[in-house]
Amino acid sequence: DTGVSQNPRHKITKRGQNVTFRCDPISEHNRLYWYRQTLGQGPEFLTYFQNEAQLEKSRLLSDRFSAERPKGSFSTLEIQRTEQGDSAMYLCASSLVGRYGYTFGSGTRLTVV
Amino acid sequence: AQTVTQSQPEMSVQEAETVTLSCTYDTSESDYYLFWYKQPPSRQMILVIRQEAYKQQNATENRFSVNFQKAAKSFSLKISDSQLGDAAMYFCAYRAGNMLTFGGGTRLMVKP
Image 1 (cartoon, rainbow over the protein chains, first blue to last red):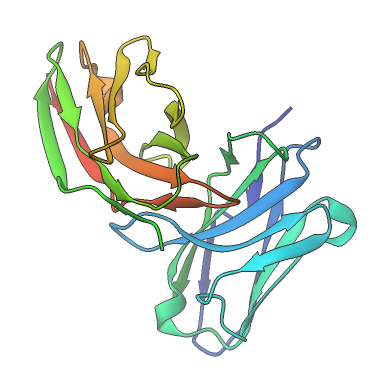
Image 2: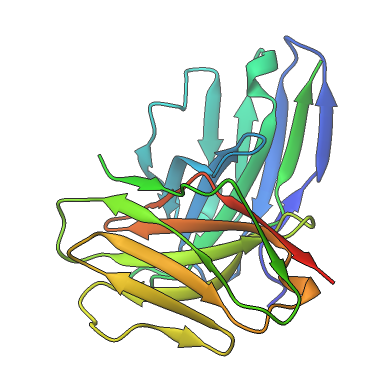
């Protein structure tokens, strides 16, 4: 068990470019969550998966955002046509269904210039 | 919608002393979980302590304990014998369904 892994740790991109982040959860965890954290704030829920099914999406997840979890393993979060307001830390977490504990990754910090 | 409020943006404590971080929440649910997470500069959120709402007994984990007041919807964290390694952002979080809702955080500084 190597914990939740997120790549890359940092991403700097120009406004209007597309970016993709990857999250590898703990292998036996069937739930995977994406959160966004802006500077000085608490994380905000974006979306979550149970196995490969995306079960809930926040209204924060605009049409420019898409998340996938093929085969219920790793997940990707893509942001199209990035805007400066997308600059934030993107956190991934995983858990088992019915268990209250989440394990978080170290996040991907996105800077849009 | 559930909300979690941490009214102390920043707190300071002398090493070896005790500090209490405040948290209030708003919910109409009767069954839920409450958590305190620590986020050091390394960025990874680490679970410090959890409390099930149906349990009257306050949770304790070594130097960390909570004061859970269900009627008042209050959930404070007490850190005893503070250590330099306790310096971090602390987030209170609530969970009734499938997601965690976080407060805005309290930055804890520990003075040697």
